[in-house]
Amino acid sequence: MWQVLKNNLRQLLASKGTLVVALIMPVVLFAASLAAFGTGDGMYRWNVALVDQDQTALSQNLSEVLSQDANRVKALEEEEINEELKSGRMDLAVLVPAGFEQKVLSGEEPSLTLRSLKGQEVAGTMSVALNLYVADLLRIRDIQGLTDGQSLADSYRNLMQEGMQYREVPVSEHSGSAGMRQGSGFLFYVLSISMLQVASLILKEKQLGTLSRIRQAPVERLEYIFSVFLAGVLILLVNLLSLHALITYAFSVYTTLSMYLLWFYYGLVWLFIGIFMALIVNSSAVHGSLIPILTVITSMLGGSYWPIWLMPEFMQKIARITPQYWANDAMEILQQGQSLQGIPQHLLALTGFAALFLSLGVFALRRSRANQTFV
Image (tube, rainbow, N blue to C red; front, side, top):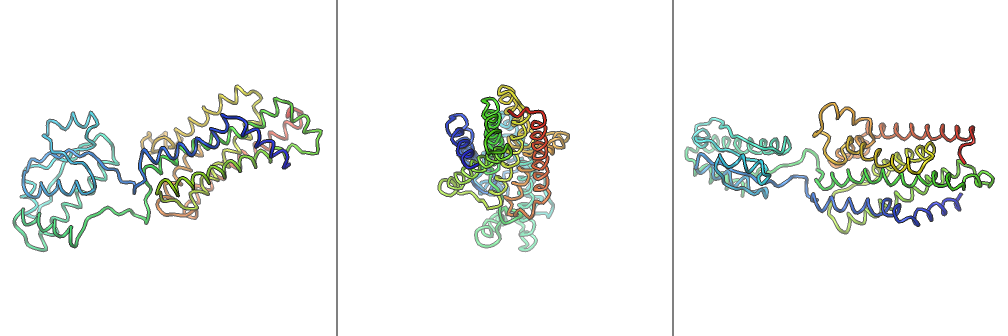
């Protein structure tokens, strides 16, 4: 069997296309995602349009607060913000109404208006930050008994520097970066293609007639299938070692052993799917067409290209039938500091996919043996 395994690896490495897909693309796409989306704590920095209709000390202080998280704040007129938002030059707009300072000083809670075309992730996060800012102003006013806007703004500024500070803290100890989330999604997609390509060795041997000679040699067909499985495992290990080196020496990204184990287990699931496909498909053209169709559609549904919550509700329900959905959702949880023990449902779902296609593969192998169609 070891000779068969060496032969399989030799064939994989001899094919430039397979070499690129199996060993190079996962690392390149992962690195590109980290570089494009960043490796920080997951908080985006936004272009904020500020429409100040109050022109008081507290409204000017709000501009300082918005700029503290590295957001780029630009003062605009109200009639300008629609065009700025549509063009994408601004991510959101904050409208400070006239009488903002007066309401705060009188103990009332003023209303700030937010406008954004970027969805709940932007508007929701900024809304929470503004509500906390207003609540802090009202609390300082009540504690210190201030009745002047400038004094309240100065007091808030001093407390931010010396004592009471507002900062966004993740619910758990760790929060995943945007680059890590997107990179992991692309990695799941490429691993799917990679494992299907490795399993295509079976189809290639069927067409070359090598397996007819294997039947006469002291190597069982099941041993040959297992050697293909081992070749896929070795490819997976090389990918993960390359990713570990990339993350360690090139990018500062929070990763855990659980994340590597999830990537590895996901790759095994698609290896079982690939073996089953190679056993039931007899044409290289058909197999080559099925690979992009299967991997692209399931990756789109499963959230590898974009967040699941961007899709309609019925599509989110359909996504549950794909391995990518469970893998991407599990990775989100792991990036929040959880371990594999915190995702039993996701691991059970992936195990279900693996068991299903392993059973189908065994059935296809026995059926081919009965019909003598394995050669």
